[in-house]
Image 1 (cartoon, rainbow, N blue to C red):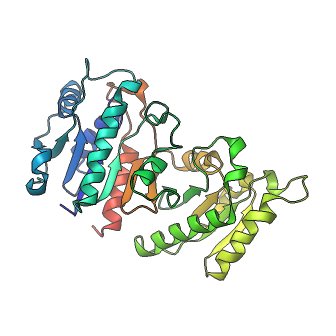
Image 2 (image 1 turned 30 degrees about the vertical axis):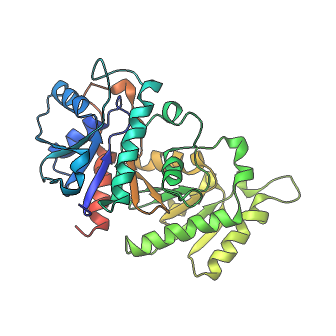
Length: 324
């Protein structure tokens, strides 16, 4: 089972199962996988959306010897009480989502898999302000808090924010030379070892035009020292660049990774450039964790009109790094 994929469906009232059904129909999943979710909800949504896939139920108490079948949805059932298959998101699903992650991390710890894919989750409802995002939640549960790195990956251009889902007023006090160096080295190692690619980094400043009217700027105090130290480690990195012009066509073509100081500084342009053709990859964990780069999209639930591209990109990426 170590070569299999663990998939946590995530928020029960998201479009994820619809996207999974579409990915299966398009034959985009090459490896056997275990889907952790409510089997009852899975069957109910599948019927409502007019899909018909074979299901292999896996008993938690017999997981050691469970047969993971190709061309089946292998389901590890997590109980979840619901009145209808499509509903609005509330706090009522928090325990269910937590139980799904507990089982997923348990399987990974047992050595049953080294890949975790999770569907979108409402951070406001599930995390309840205890964690900045699911990246940080999984890092804490994996005993890797502080080592996690968010990478939004596209084969042409990837981005990584030094701070993640953080209020803008808190960004300044949460960036450091050490944090920048850690992010870059983690991504550099991943690109070379897993993707067999040479990373070429650009790094943004924090302030508009990399300037400030104060005596000492974050660029001079934090970012430039990080760049200089990274260059001494033979990392191909340049900057800091003003974020408002870095993503212009003639500028960005020189790089394949952009390190930004905060979330929207780099995620806004990458989503504008590539829309759904990007995925969220968590690095610095004991396993590879990926998720489509979009939210639960509750307003589209049950309409069967959601775009599966980002989830398909997750499976394509996984096939790429595994040499398929």
